[in-house]
Image (cartoon, rainbow, N blue to C red):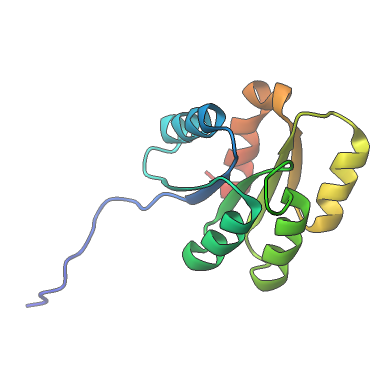
Length: 132
């Protein structure tokens, strides 16, 4: 007889939310838990925390705010993608300026999204990147 515990629950994706505004971070967590109930969510409120927690937890996906204290989201994304190239990063910003989108992709992000479009687009982007 095997004494090992077998978890029959399907493990969901692991997600790191790197956002320095508590209300938005909490809202994103609620949105993810609604659509991905088995997901495991970690939080960071600065670029340096995002970097550290990505190396520790190695999430499947990171929602990365561009304007983070201590290290901006583009720089954090570059560092993360050098070490963990398979992690999907979605960079979020208040601006819809295409230059930010280009900079996010150049930093290694899988996607870029303006925060005012997240309600309409974020869930479908997450489903596509997490293959669910």
